[in-house]
Length: 507
Picture 1 (cartoon, rainbow, N blue to C red):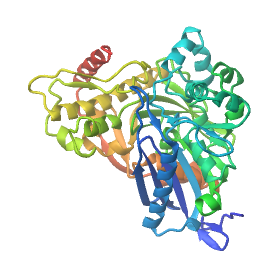
Picture 2 (picture 1 turned 180 degrees about the horizontal axis):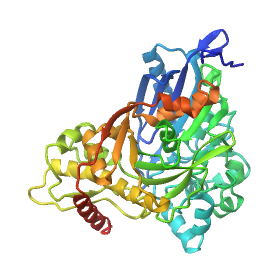
Picture 3 (picture 1 turned 45 degrees about the vertical axis):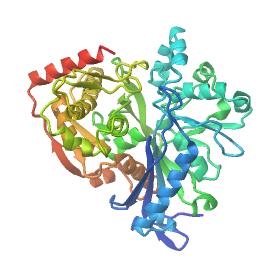
Picture 4 (picture 1 turned 30 degrees about the horizontal axis):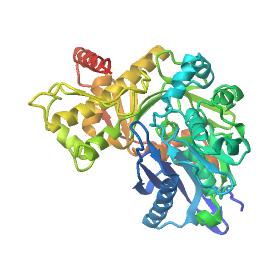
């Protein structure tokens, strides 16, 4: 079916004008779908959470069928809310939780095991063995990553070694591996497209940053057969068409990126040195380094931000595994609050933490420490400690993790950041944003649309189908909501960072 670009920047599907973009944001705890118009306005949004599966301490899984069903439910809801038909959609963009790993049968499309989530730590022993054999430097040089259970490569190895018959089938080409973008595209296209984008591929421990291709040597070390791997494509461009049988219409998928890269794009951080922090299940700070592959010497990662045509943009990244998930733990585990948004009002009832400190390393420490065995720590409790003190300590812990990340990035780049764009669900918390600005010592700017992962996927899809022609078109769409200026003295900031470092050193 042919799609033509008209002067009024709408698309046609047969005789009907298609004038909207649909973005799928498949996250760690839920699936969000938005519909965006050609002016960049979000006209409809829907979200659905799904099960989190914890088979053993440190293990985290998702049922891929839960993910798929959540997507189908949400896309119906978002279309209904917007009074939009599928034939009104010009193109689809996809953004996703990145390192989460799925392997499925090429013939039946059925997963052979639950998805192993990026937070999962079960492959710690594989990583330690590789480190002891002197392989980490090789992986870091080629992929920009460290050997940590966070990434997909060792998860693939674990599934192939622990599901009966899986390795034989994989070698024979009977199985497909994918991060969540790949799994969804496979399903959406009726099994016609086994593809990923370069940003997701850069998070697997298997892709070479220089060649932007799967690295045969790394695949051999991790025992990953080439036959299971998807084709790597630029982030902006055609990935395939949804099948009329499974989706209801043939719609092109023209933008795909991992969630943090999509957020960087959605924040219009297109210039070298521009940075954003996304507050989701974890917190993720990315800084655009342009065409330069900056190798971190301070514990951060090097990653592909996106690729458009032959131009590749890279980034330096720091990640804390637990951010908003710490608030969910207060809600679901400790029952301190009824809903996540309640934490701001509770924390605001006290002026400080009363000496309580919470290091939310509930699934290990990410950058710059990379301690897979670390676990959460609460110290400084007294008889006077209350739920409000713990709530405020949680917000401070979320913010202080990001200070460590930023300081590491500044070391790598040898210059100070002047501004940080913030987004994600927890960025709606004004108290958290003020704490963040105070401890960073830089201005934090929140956009009007805080769902920048979804927006980034929509922007990429729009560029891929030709609705927008340039990055300047996207810059014109981005709008500021609020700024948060630091109000803390440098001495007070140094003292607080010192007590935080002392707490982290206890892990």
